[in-house]
Image 1 (tube, rainbow, N blue to C red):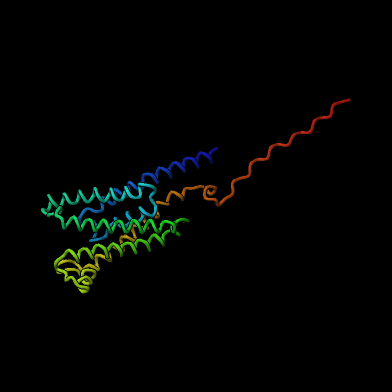
Image 2 (image 1 turned 90 degrees about the vertical axis):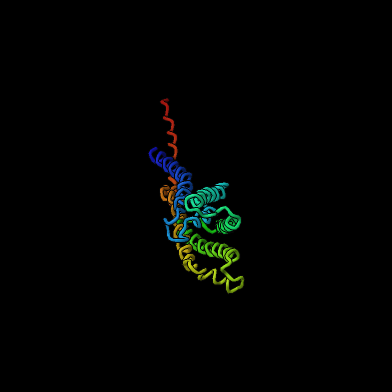
Length: 232
């Protein structure tokens, strides 16, 4: 009885944990986007988009990352508009933001494509998660920096100008390869943390639930006693 009650309690805790964890992670992502909190392009967003496609179920896989990004982007734009005096709602800025969302969609679709590769033990799923995050960040970097090259008049619209946008950037700004370095590092770290924590509840499973120990055989029914001999 105690074993069954403990197993039921563990299952309930795991269910509640897996229901609340995506929302907690989304809150962390939104807060992490505050300007100056992390180094440039050291972002949790890459992990949210990639792991959303890999692990989150049903409509939450799309709705949670998209909702988190939209709400936080609107909040950031309002702060830049009224707190810093920047013009962030002009068509050029909106087109650039749309390019960022195209990059996020690439990350999500990559995660969806890698989803069949992540079943199994907690540690065996980390290599595809980390490699997927690195590939996703490279694709995102290529998409967004190509848009910056097309949008910024400081770049010559040649192959050499495009390569400059991918490597050194325009004058007066940090070199873009440093942004790529921070993106690769943060994507790998936060994606691994998401995957590891998402499966943390599995560690509380009993050996019977994991299939490591065979369930005890049911007790054999007592054999029927032989009828007593009746006196003649």
